[in-house]
Length: 398
Image 1: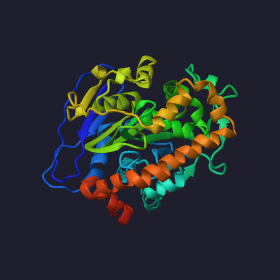
Image 2 (image 1 turned 30 degrees about the vertical axis):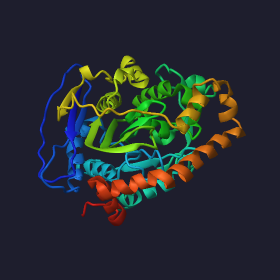
Image 3 (image 1 turned 90 degrees about the horizontal axis):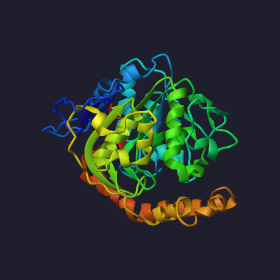
Image 4 (image 1 turned 90 degrees about the vertical axis):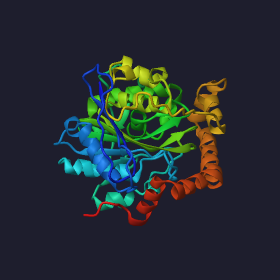
């Protein structure tokens, strides 16, 4: 397993320094970091992403004759730093694809019971980018955009066939196409970390995906096995320019880390991100499952880094606890788990959905997280870059 590591500083005049860390398996993960430079020019991040795509073998991982789906990551419709795909991550990936001859590109959005896709793509600055580059946006919850068809996986399922005994249904639009996941580096209250693997949770499952939370680790590994069967090519581009520490995927402490990653191996990229955050990747169940089931490489000792050497880097992130995490634990894993079907599969589900909306959108965002966002915009170069996207829509001039 080979991985390229590339530190991304929003600076001009930076240099790229290759390095190697370990080598075992044939599948390649490349993580990239851009070294610090003397002056700050956020525009260079687009070149960083294009260089990252090439370094990570994006052209080789994807089928040039197939449509390429961009699957962004909207964990919260509000622009919480580190929670969502960044606009420079999106624009940089589009430019990398086009520069490598991938011109048939689309984006697929999904909706959850607590996240509004339309609000999310607007507040996070994606819409002007899609418009500028003529990227059609489809919605997996709109019947006019795609249909959900039963899919019978060839791989043995860990949980999905038990959770959905009536059959596993996926969007037919995904079959035969490339997909690029665009996650961020962050913690998660249910899975410790979240990244490339869990990003399929939104695209391949209906808005009733909360049925799976008691078996979330097994579920997302089942989805990875399905992706390997249905997609012409599978790739991930992960943004850690600002990473999320704490009770993610929404309410977090954003920390500037200047890291971007890319790979065709979804397990390995999540493993490296987990290690950077300070976690043991093989102790995280979904990474361990992906590794032991041969879906990727999760053991950092079996990963070769190309780019900056981050073998000894540790950000000391902690997931922590909050009210939402406690309520989720009671529902999915705790002593009240026996009430799960009543709470999640009957009209009673409206109560926890309303609680989550009030807790996040009407309590946390206006009273705390909006101030965190404003401080990030005012005090960090990435926040300044976000404001430029809000003003100009995109930063690459034709």
